[in-house]
Amino acid sequence: MTLTRGARALGAIAALAVLLVAEPAHAHMDADVGDFYQGVFQPFLHPEFLCSALAIALWATQQEERDAYVTCGAFGLGVGLGATAAFLGEGGTASLWGPRLTMLVIGPLVAARIRPPVAVLAGLVTLAGLAQGHAATASDRDVVARPVLWTLGLAIGAGLLGAYATMATQRFRAFWVQVGVRVAGSWIAAIGLMVSALAARGR
Amino acid sequence: MRRVAPVLLTILAVLLARSAFAHTGQGDVGSGFVAGFLHPITGLDHLLAMLAVGMWGAQLGMPALWVLPVAFPLVMAVGGVLGIVGAPLPASEPAIVLSVLLLGAAIASGRKPPLPLAAALVAFFAIFHGYAHGRELPEAASAVGFSAGFVLATGCIHLTGIGVGFVTKLPHGENVLRAGGAAIAMAGVLLAWRLAGA
Image 1 (cartoon, rainbow over the protein chains, first blue to last red):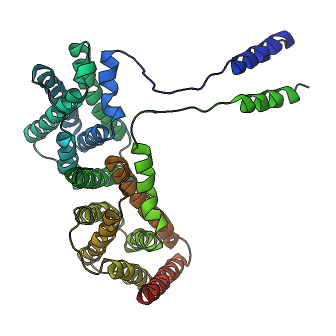
Image 2: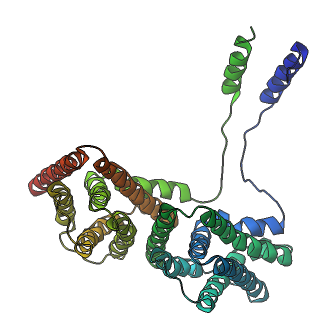
């Protein structure tokens, strides 16, 4: 596409005008995207939640395809149930020990590439989801206006993270991808160990 | 003029640029991450030992190539926990220097011990490296940021070592790798000499 000289000049003037009125960009400042998307993004904005959700996602990738999606679904369900429990409960302070324990337990399972029966897998992952959903919601429940949307968003976000990771590794089945998943599991377990020790020391 | 105008426009844009504050108000996770990431990289003894682990893994071949980088961060984190809780671990500094010397010598020798023996040796030294990092943790650092940075940096140094170890695929590469191991061992001798004089 060829622009005329006049159009180019107009474009340059418009660009200049935009630059002259430029303001500082404060990314993520008071970004109100609604309760549903706040829920979806919640695990991605908190390092401990992200690490524990990643551990589950990586574990899902090591299972047979059907079991992998069961894992993602169970995690999403657990997160949703945990969030519901946090909304219905008394409140109180959020405990981050659930995500930390998830890192400590699931990380080594990923590193060792353990593939348990699907019932055990689903049970463990649902428990991790419960802890994660409860902790995530308890920390933010006072600012959530519509709990149903938040819970739905949180559960879908958590389930999707695992589903995307599973799809990616099902697509790239190279040996090094599998090794990379195990190394990442080991790193998550190591991070979980250190974070837990630091938290126990009041840090 | 057609060529000059975009340049002038770019200069003007740069002159008018103002700072962008991304992720403001989310604590000091970033600074903790940087502190943790720099910690293993800025200490020559840690850096050389972890580089040697990767190089040795590449030299030993499968499955040591991936078993060592999987095992090392986990065991090092155990050492880190011991350091954080203040558990006494005698002679940690000499053990770290010894790890540089012995891992370098193992690469230089070109011998291939059984995997359990290699993994046990690496795990033993990993405890001391982790302990030193745990003891030196800055007070202000964010726990999760520091831990993630520390573990990722360690993993990256291993991967670099593995990358260096791939010289064995080249003609005379095995000898080049062994020479690198000898250089690391020599650095270990120098560190030991300095430690003895300190």
